[in-house]
Amino acid sequence: MKNTGIFFIVLIIIVTFSSCASTKRIRYFQDLSESATPSDLSIASYAEPHIQPDDILSININTVDAEATASINSRNGGFVNVGGAQPSNMAAATGYLVDKEGYVDVPILGKIKLAGLTTLQARETVRTKALAAFKNPIVDVRFSNFKITVIGEVNRPAAYIIPNEQVTLLDAIGYAGDLTIYGKRENVLLIRKDSYGKSFTVKLDMTKKAMLSSPYFYLRQNDVIYVEPNRTKVLNNDNNIIKYITAAATIFTAFVLAKRYL
Image (tube, rainbow, N blue to C red; front, top):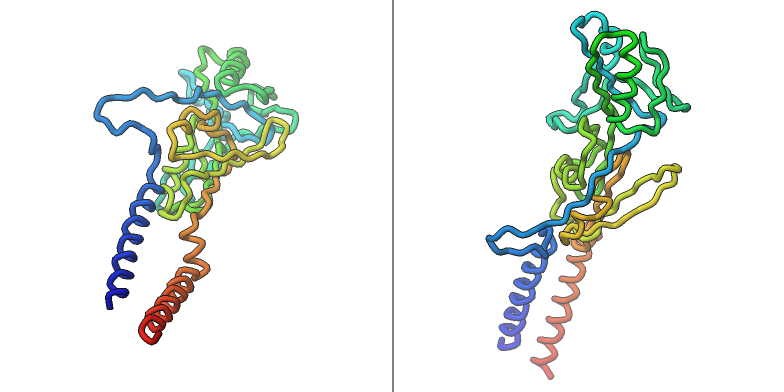
């Protein structure tokens, strides 16, 4: 009986410390100061994405005569909700496709090369072209298919079309409803293609504030984020916890019986 009491005390201690460790594993930015005073943070610099072939652009031109630009603006359509109740999961209905040579074909304005430009540069390029046809045009150019994909241990894994091209890793995790309790915060995988179309991977630690200053903090179009399951999820799926408990109980029973009869 004495051995049994000792066993349960040890078991309670193990469970208590395991719970504390589990809580620590699911916290973000664990190395931030917990004091009430403000602390400085280093945030990565944002670099505007460049337009590439097969991108879809929304091109709007506004003048005092709305009918004059109707044929141009009507091509843009709008955003339709494809994620049910989640407004952040959207797909572009239509827009201007950048062809393999980097051109878009705009009614009235003709073919304009936009590949390699930022949306700000593309805006000026289209405006220069529009000045020949319209008086004082106001031009807006943005991505209609700025897509990121979040999969793995998140609450809403999906591909998300985002109207705003300035998107961070935290934004993406927020769109996906945060990581589940089983997600490995210290090992989030980013999959990206470089300018030559070659894929590479980067691992980011969301438990450290250094992630905020990483050059990969701001996402690029077609990035994929994969959140790996932690050991607890793997053990649960494999039913190994039950096996370990059963084995431990068997060993303990054998130990108690041996002490009793020896």
